[in-house]
Structure formats: structure tokens, C-alpha cells
Image 1 (cartoon, rainbow, N blue to C red):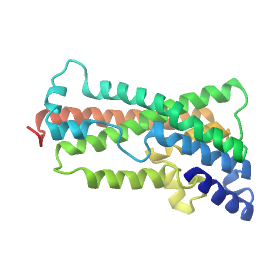
Image 2 (image 1 turned 90 degrees about the horizontal axis):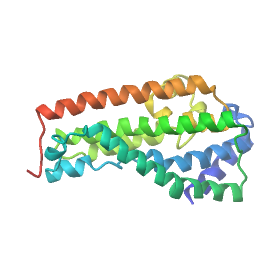
Image 3 (image 1 turned 30 degrees about the horizontal axis):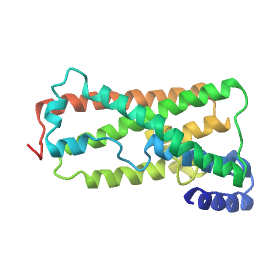
Image 4 (image 1 turned 135 degrees about the vertical axis):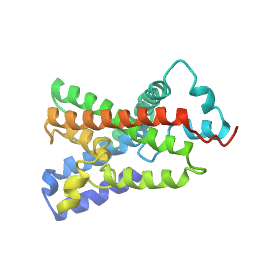
Length: 231
């Protein structure tokens, strides 16, 4: 239902402003349902990691002394979750959108290869951000405020609400270079073929690597000082 409402809003907007942001109406509707499909795999509404709960229970103390690195095995779990949600939460809404409105389908193996790479990098970027948010619970008594702020930023700046390409002036320029753009806007443009593949993948890879590096530093920091609410 959320996707259908978004689709009608975008149809009305593009009928009033044909060619807005370089999309036609069919591409705008496709953008709607593609980004809708990203909500689950990219966890655009936040969460998806068990670290805050394990901090509250005290189990994080055991996690930090396991031989497997905390960040890497959490990433492995998240990739599995993303793959499952893509199948059960991502593809079905796209099929509904295709049946009701019709959507653009990528043509050629090159477009599909770029899309799959962009989807993977988008998931890793999303994980990198959510991992940092989850680690904040190691120092805060309550992580709900951080999660709410993260959800607002991700929802607005990822391209989920509206394509970042229609944001005006400096706001659009800034939004398109922030890490949240790598989660929804970038892979959606790869799907539509409206962005250069190599440049887009390089942008996503930069933010994925940067956030993972910050997460590694954060993991190292909590080994020295961590507040465990449950033990």
C-alpha cells in the first residue's frame, strides 16, 4: 500500500513536471518500486542488528572475546538477512508494481551485473552505518534517540521518499555525496541506467570501505571501555 501511494504521488508530480530529474513517468514509477524493494535488504528504517540487545543482556562481553571478529561475523549475518528479505520482501512488491503500473526492466547482462554489484555495495554501506549506530549503545544508556535520528536521516537522504536528483541547489549536491545516497539512490539509478556504472560503484565502494573502517575502530574502542547494562 505504501508503494502504491508513493507511485500515485510520483505520477502526479511527473505529469505536472514532465522529464523532472531526467526521468520519465515510467522511470519515476519504477524508481518508486525499486526503492520500495530496498527497504528490507538495506534495512532503511534502521535496526536489523542484535548488538544493542546483546549489550543490554551482557552477552556482548562474550562476543568480544570470540575468535571471530565481531564486525565480520555480524556482517555475514546481515548479508544473509538481506538476501532473504530481498526475496520475500523486495521482489513481491516490485511484481505488484509491475502488474498495476508497469515498470522499466534493465536490458543487457552489463546492466544486471552493475545492478547486482550496486545492490551488494548498498547493503554493505547500510550495514556499516547501522553497525556504528548499534555500537553507540556501548556508551549510551538508551540508544533509541540515536536510532530515531538515524531513521530520519536514512529515510530522507537515501532517496526513499523522493529521488535525490530533484532536491534543489546545495541540498541536492550535498545529499548525493553522503553515504545514505549509496543505499537506495545509487542502486536505483543503476537499475534505471541513469548513472554511469563505474563512477556509481566507486562512490558506493568508497562509503562502504569508509564506514567499515570506522566500525573497525569503534569495535577496537569498545574492547577498552564498554558499559554493559545487563552484567
